[in-house]
Image (cartoon, rainbow, N blue to C red; front, side):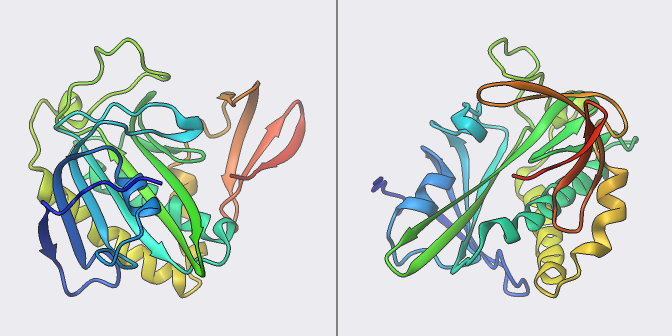
Length: 254
């Protein structure tokens, strides 16, 4: 278990939100997900956001490294007493939609899409990733949604990436102030969360399906031990991905 000191934070409070009322900002740490998930502490409570200007051990699915140099947005949201992680996954899609919609306002084109299960793409380049993790500490269950977005950090030149990537500044040619952008994203995530807990996820299915990456086109999925080619069709009301594979209809679950 990690016991990392994070006392040297800047505290930001936004009272009007349901979640993300409290933001803890630090200069650097290993991983925002790791701190919120593993550290037993009275500091953080459900709905809190931990934001680090850089991470030294950021990671995504399958424990792949996420380059987390200064200039990007790296933050995690803590949720406590989560009974069923699979039923919580549709909210992860809403987080992706919030990122996608916020970034789209910064460009002149609607070029952002959502790649199942947890990425936001600009054309065929990854610009954001989301990782949900959970654990139980005694009687308390925790889920953490970690988000990494390439904003002002040049990323296209990196050769060791698992997939081609891009940052917002490489699209727009401009540097973007991080805190206002983070607040815009969290405002949207908060709004979507209120709808989610009130069983209104299905209202977002049309927007999610319009933004579906590689819709009706072959898509190579690289898993831990195999690769598969599917044709994404639509997101379901459970947050699953309906697709075709070898002429058959299949449903992909996280």
